[in-house]
Amino acid sequence: MVQTETPRTGRKTGRATRRPTETSYWLISRIADARMEVHTLYHDGEETLPVFSHAEEAEMFLRLGQAGDEWRVTEIRAGGLISVLYGPCACVKEVALDPLPEMVARGTVGLVTFARDRFMDHLASARRRSRSSGPDRARSS
Image (tube, rainbow, N blue to C red; front, side, top):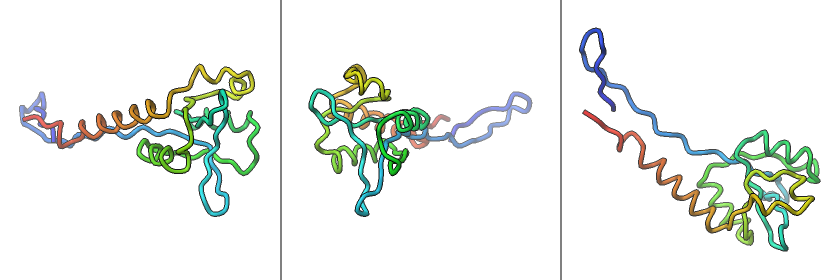
């Protein structure tokens, strides 16, 4: 709760502070054999997970790329993305952030790739920052 003073009356009012929302990411996925399957691509012989920061970018990639009709854009939060990287995409070596289909075709997707572990460290630290700035931590009198 943050206490503020109203200019006209000088009375203190309390209002709850909002916890920053956790960032959303988007993946391209499908359901196959009753399990979620995540679309990956190959860069320098390594399996790479394309991750998108906006739904529109993922939809464009899907529309312009070579994926079939069964693939869909799926929203995911940082914690879920970490789970995907430990679970169905444990073999992924890199993450491509907001790749374009032509980058994949031209072999330039490496310009937007990060090592899997480095990307997961980034996700984990972003989650910690989001939690530490929650309402319990941001009190003032």
